[in-house]
Amino acid sequence: MTDTDSFPQDAAGWQRAAAGTLIERTGIVLTEVSAGTTRGTMPVAGNTQPAGLLHGGATASLAETLGSVAAQSHAGPGRAAVGLELNVTHHRGVRSGQVHGVATALHLGRSTAAYEIVVTDDDERRVATARLTCMLLDAG
Image (cartoon, rainbow, N blue to C red; front, side):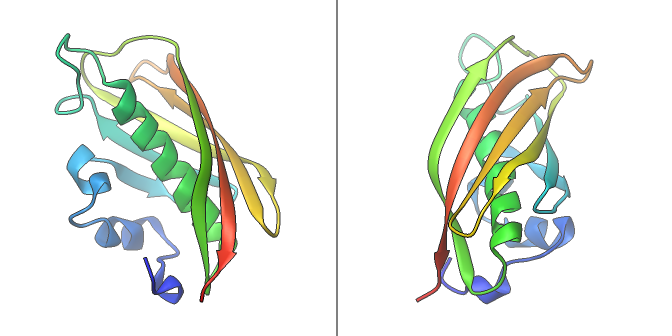
C-alpha cells in the first residue's frame, strides 16, 4: 500500500480495505484491532489441503495478517509495517469449523514490532503458535 495515511484504525475499516485481497479470499474476519492485541477468525472450509486438514499456509496467512495489522496500528499514519520474519509451529490438525487467532505484542519499538500469534480451534485447543517480526518504515 502506498497511501499509509489511509490505513484503517478499526476492525471494520480493515475488513473494508481487505476487499479483493488474500484476507478476503481466505475468509479472515478481523474482530479487534489494536497495537497490543489483534484478533480474528478464519473458516477451515476452503482453506484445506487435499487430505482435508487446514492448510499450514492458510494458518500462516491468518497469523501474518493479525500480526501485520497490529504492527500497522502501532506504526501509525505515514508509516508502513512490513514482515521480516514469520515462523509457525503447527500443533494439531483441524478439519472443520473456524480457527481463532490472537496476536499479542511482544515488542513495540520505533523500527520493529514483534508478535506472538496463538491460533485455536472452536474448542479452544491450540492449533498453532506463530511469531511475526515486522519492520516499521517511514513513508516516502
